[in-house]
Amino acid sequence: MSFFQAQQITKAYGEKVLFEDLSFSVAPGQKVGLIARNGTGKTTLLNIIAGLDQPDSGKCTYQSDLKLSYLQQDPVFDPDLSISEALLNAGNELSRTVKEYEELLEAANSVDNSATSSRLQKLVERMDALQAWDYESRVKQILTQLKIGRLDARVGELSGGQIKRLALARILIEEAHLILLDEPTNHLDLEMIEWLEGYLSRKKLTILLVTHDRYFLDAVCNEIVELENGMLFNYRGNYSYFLEKKQERLEAEAARSEKATNLLRKETEWMRRTPQARTTKSKARIDSFYDLKEQANRTTEGGVGEIKMEMARLGKKILELEHISKQFDGEPFVNDFSYVFKRGERAGIVGPNGSGKSTLLNLLTGALKPDSGKITTGETIQYGYYRQEGLQVDDNKKVIEVISDIAESISLGKGKSFTASQFLHFFNFPYSVQHDLAGKLSGGEKRRLYLMTVLMRNPNFLILDEPTNDLDIATLNVLEDFLENYEGCLLIVSHDRYFLDRLVDHVFVFGQKGRIKDFPGNYTQYRLSLSKQLQTEKKAEKAETPTIKEKPKEKTKLTYKEQKEFDALEKEIEMLEAEKASLLEKMNSGQLSTDELLEISQKYAAIEQALETKTERWIELSEWN
Image (cartoon, rainbow, N blue to C red):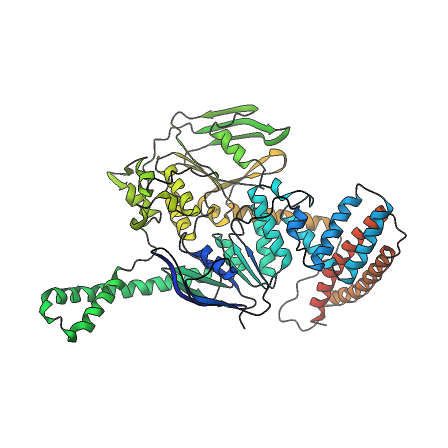
């Protein structure tokens, strides 16, 4: 039984048909990734499934009592709501009780009176009756990982990125039957993305998501659906499987297209040679001619091949940083950083949101001055700086005019060049849309156009601040191919791990208090190194604790050590259950002060977590007992 089923749905805007007669379904437990180019209808399709838009024809059917949650690209909240009110559904008794409990705990830290203690006492009883402690623990985990604090703060005080994280947190807390996610990794730093990836891949959820993060697709999804040329192609596997099978499909299509081209040549000769033969008897052959023509002319994603831009000459001295520092309101964002950039440098910059990455870029380009230290820029340096804020495009200009106003052509060296139109086509702007007004472009298409305006100026030091936001996977592949052939210095800030891994040789890692470490390797190599370091530290901490080997798949019984652990776990779980009951009895006694009740509530939550961990291990060992 499917949670959701689309039956022959069609959607068009004016003369532009996004998709026609699409049929597909999402069953319980499926985690589906939807892939398509920008402007081809991904978000429209999600809106239709969520009931926010209607198809021109066809229909969507849902399982009765289906609970559906939808993370939109630009979620909207009432700015007057508190974070707590926006997060937890007031119509749900469980979430309402947890919300009241969290708010009262915060108030109890600053206020100590009998009324607060009495209310907290009653809430503890309700929490126990509703078995809400696990729910409350999950809420805290999600809020902590997405760095959402101050539940009493107003939504109107939050930035766009914080609002997106707030909306994501609410959806994870609700755990609906069917979850729709539109670019869930946007506005998350790398640490948050990796946590979310692990959370969604472990949970038994049903998901339909749109994302350009290829590692995320590979780890989370067990099915990929591609929307191309108004049709859906299904691949029963993750992103790696999709790539393999799509390549096979494209090769088969290319073979059919070549065969169709050869047949078309013969049919064209017949159509030209024998116009008098076009009687009713030859109508089928004429129809076949036009079918062949359409098949032969059908194009796939290939683009126009590799290009290598001719950039401005780069001298011996590039860029030198000597002990530079920058603070805002007494807080260091760049702290005593030194580095000498070399010809052909390819570096990534990673770190949490707000750690100072954009500050460093603005220091390098002269938009900011360091508080101390020295920056020396080579005389031949010509920066190309792609900023997060994007480009303010005149909506009344045609797409081709935005590019041709910068240059009518771009030099590729050795006497070769691209016209503005060819360059647009290379970056997935079909000739058919190049004379459309820029105001008709989607957000992702406008960012792609802005990126092109930066590249058109032939910089020899290219700085890209989050260039992958809102770009589709097809465009990312084109951009990566382009940058792989780029011979200047390249500096990238991105939360797209695949993008970093493919393009950079080393990464600058932002740590606490503006400290920057240079790691010699790509992002994945950095994470593996960090993971090994953490494992070494944990081993050192647990040097005196005996380790238990991971059970082999072929084992049929517990080892002696595992049997001892299993027996000990039974006793520990029993003791924790008794302690939990004792703490609950104390919380229900009505004799505790607010501070005592707060302290015991925190102990209770810790015991709940320990019980969950030990019970999971007990269940794992019991399989072999």
